[in-house]
Length: 204
Image (cartoon, rainbow, N blue to C red; front, side, top):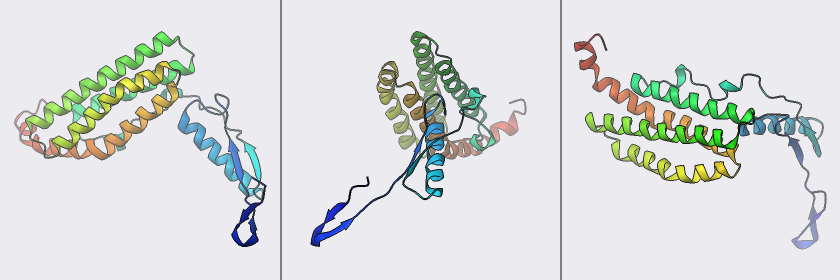
């Protein structure tokens, strides 16, 4: 990085860099946590005048079960979908915990298969509701489901190759992104579409 770069017209320039380093599993045990630790270490390098490297002093969080959190901000407003989202989050965290505890590959792969199976069940639930209540965004939403199901085989293959953290991060990013971008509008639509049913049947 310190080598001068020759430019046209006999001009020269020199670059500098600030580096932040995080180390698995000493620093963190999930990809997003490792990136955050490395990013923070990079800014420490910058604060010392650049052109240096810093190894993160962060340590993994103790409560690994809460790596993927589900809170009120993730609610879509339709109980059946919210309950299934909670289950998906629990299963993702269960796989993450198994990886941290160095569970046998057969166990973690079995947990992933269960997660993918429940994901398919969840999609069937949403598709059924969208058809029943004639959701205007059905075609686009259903295509999102189909795309992920087609990617599931690739995710399982990557997982079996030892890229468990990459697969988990991919699933986490997709799940939270799908809830925010697609399922919240669907939940709002379903909540409004089923209001008469709720009023006519208070026990629901």
